[in-house]
Length: 94
Image 1 (cartoon, rainbow, N blue to C red):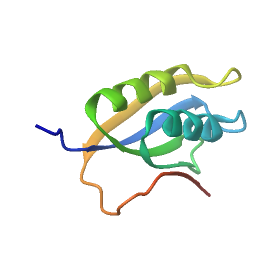
Image 2 (cartoon, helix red, strand yellow):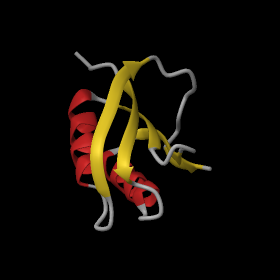
Image 3 (cartoon, helix red, strand yellow):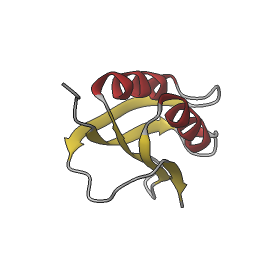
Image 4 (cartoon, rainbow, N blue to C red):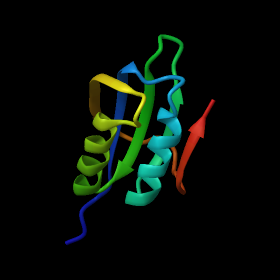
């Protein structure tokens, strides 16, 4: 039985802007085959929509908790959502 892809919406808080966090997120997503997007938010957080199977999503968010060298992730709030658009890959949005 093939597991259906899940979609997770998340906000990452802490020192996550101006430290290469979006590029780090894209690299990890590409390595794990995660689809979706990442973008900076006006409140200083980073928004992520990630689609993939359960195991890959868990590995993805484990890496996001670590972040790139200069980041400091304080917390990640996430919830399962229904993806409204089909993603072909993972992109950085402005």
